[in-house]
Image 1: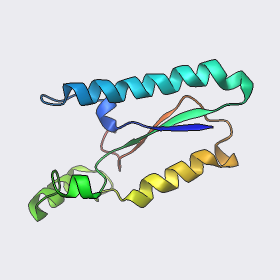
Image 2 (image 1 turned 60 degrees about the horizontal axis):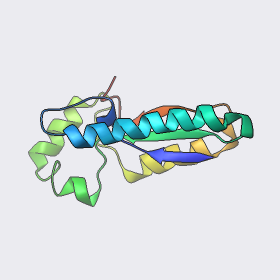
Image 3 (image 1 turned 45 degrees about the vertical axis):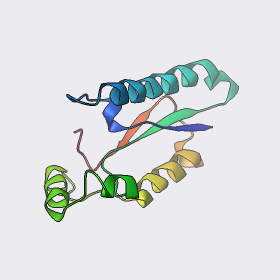
Image 4 (image 1 turned 90 degrees about the vertical axis):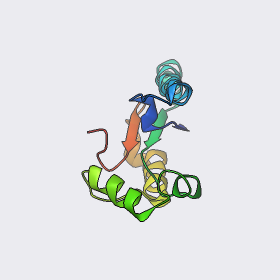
Length: 115
């Protein structure tokens, strides 16, 4: 089993994130191609696409002010910013037998931001 990490940036572009979005879209397609190529060998391949997750990198940039945090949380249907645990729980699910029939999927862990 393979779990790739891409980003919701691979699903939607923006005015100043060309290279980032294209690279993440490439990871999504790599995930799908790998799933198609190796499924018959019992190898599953899925990708996790984090949205805005409260990590050090994001905290110091996108979430650098309380106003920014409230604004992003307010645009997310679930009404909060993601945590590293949200991504980890998704990885644990994908690695479990509960996900034994999932392959080639790109799962957005974004609180509904791309909904």
